[in-house]
Image (cartoon, rainbow, N blue to C red):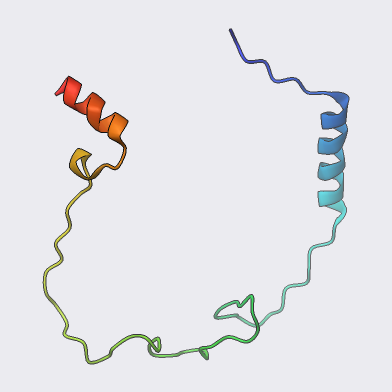
Length: 89
């Protein structure tokens, strides 16, 4: 059976009103100054051109090797998937 989307008059009016108001709302004026960040809770912590974050250790050793194990069925927490994978392997 096919799923048929039912669009009522109420949906059509709501979509039309949304489209009309979105075109009528003026766009806020954009300042000419360039911003280096935004903050939801007050002033920014770091000034423009900061060199490092406070939590970064600048004297940390550089280089090394990164080892990454790709997730597979062994690490899967879903028991149903593990069961069906065992059936088909």
